[in-house]
Image (cartoon, rainbow, N blue to C red; front, top):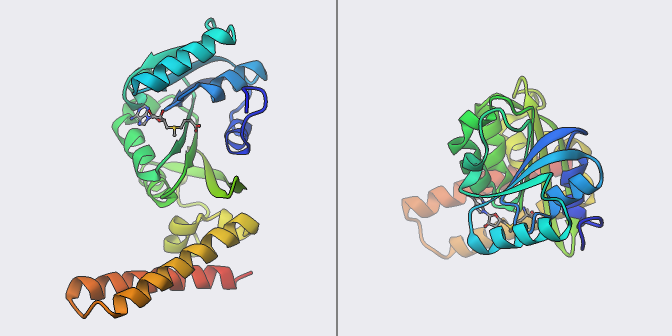
Length: 237
Ligand code: SAM
């Protein structure tokens, strides 16, 4: 991978960056995504934010090597604290767990007033992001799911608007599976949820041997419920 030929995962994220955006890529690591966006002429201004020193140094080095120091500003800090209010209108956060992404958004809320689009790529736990979007007035405008090197990734793009759009059918299964993804049900979607469901069934069988304590019973009920949501969704296609 280089900054022209990104991974399929990061290319999918880049695809959602509106032309001419002022971008903040939070948790940028090597700054591949902002470098790509500038080199492809998608943006001319980007902030690459990093909390950890190693990745921050990698980002600085990458931006210098690519000769993009007039366009990409590498800043060290936690989440959206690297962004000044009103400085950017598009935020990408990719390659982390959904809970961490939702937490970064929650703690940096005041920096999102002028942001028009969020592009979020959780490696796991997209449900935490969908819940945060719903509670904070962000409408999902698109969702993608893709497989790369044996791993399945989701990419969520959101703009301010009625957050309940797309969830009319079933809020619970929409939050878990993705309201837009479960309509399309492409191959990676079916593979991911078939695997998850089989895994939950395996855990359920193990729990059958674990006695009948209230917390075990609660766990079993929760798994059964999630299995039924997934089976119902998969059965719709
Ligand atoms: N975004 C890149 C990608 O998708 O390929 C890098 C993903 S890397 C696995 C996650 C990066 O997020 C790490 O470099 C980590 O240091 C950074 N990170 C984690 N929590 C962060 C936070 N609160 N603020 C800024 N960066 C963070």
